[in-house]
Length: 526
Ligand code: GLC
Image 1 (cartoon, protein in one colour):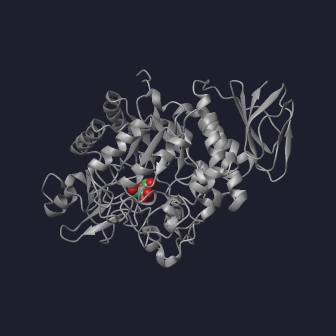
Image 2 (cartoon, helix red, strand yellow):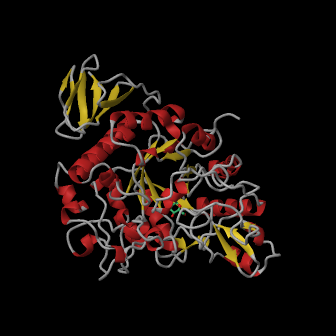
Image 3 (spheres, protein in one colour):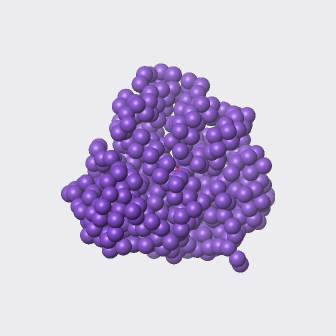
């Protein structure tokens, strides 16, 4: 099958993830919402992003903060109503921002009418929307699959005596993607949103939809007894049978036909850390873009960084969704050493991600260089933390966005916010806009530079460098990162002018590129 044209607007675009609960509260409830988002969209236009990805705002009991959807076409009153969403879409149009929404197809909420019907009538048509199995011989779960959020991936329905499968919370039953009726439901859901003006979807756990038909046990790594975080326990298994089944591509082919009619994009949350396997979900007429998550677990040294960037750049090219942060992970500033060191490194990595072909996503607050917030145990709200003793969970990266000095740093007028405001006045958008050397202003200049790259070749060369550096060239630009805590000089051959740098002013030219510790720079052949 010939490769289909991707939506033109996707090419070289920069995306921005809005974690809606924590972006802006427009109604004084202490929880972010659509009106709040609408009123803050100017910030994104000023920053220079192209795509706004909004995390789930659908009707939900919020067991997993909206990733447990009870109605895929209804807006939860906590976030507003569908007219508020229309206003967001309209304002995005005015600001030339594309709107991507989050579709959660692996599972519904247990409060979804399909699951309620499946429980109420085991002989009815909705039963087969989900994955049911009889107990094992000992009465326990039918196999050894486990949930990302702790415990088995199976919960017993006492009434029918069968277990249902859930790769996340028991409140998030997994759908049966081998059932054509489920497929038809989602085609309708996609059409509903594309008709409404949405430009694309981010597909939650896009690698998980289809499960092994025989529900075989997953192999397990042997030395994992002491793991505390349920996500680490999850990764101690080989997910041979519950993830990445080859039939997944068929689903995305079907969706692609729908998306292409609307010039819409399919962007997968593909937690697949192996390039050839990830490439299979993207093949030709599959997903347009798949996230590459190895940046979240790589070590900070030139060898690891080069390997983490080069493999997908060579294997997947412009279909990579580059990310270094999200609402699910400790912030990169914290992962890369914390404080100014972490900030410098994270910005340096961002320069490299912006230089490569593909779509690069920022997560809210990344443009401010936010560190993880301190969320006391008793205030934690993420089910990973509240249901697993000793697990930190994801609240540290989900605290309210700091906008300006004042109550709740401008996030909300409420007395209490759903998570504590974890940042300082100096972190706020307002404070950083005033300071020409701030992280925010550096990020904005980087996005300006990135837009100048649209139309460049997708061919990336990886020249040899001193071992401390990671570098690649695209057309006449070289992107280079010093991954050490010492200054490094590099003479790549030829004359270069520095057009962007993360420490100090650009402008110098000559044969030698000098980089401060953990600095990244962009040089143009002179
Ligand atoms: C994805 C989401 C995460 C959610 C999970 C279950 O990984 O990013 O926040 O908890 O899916 O839907």
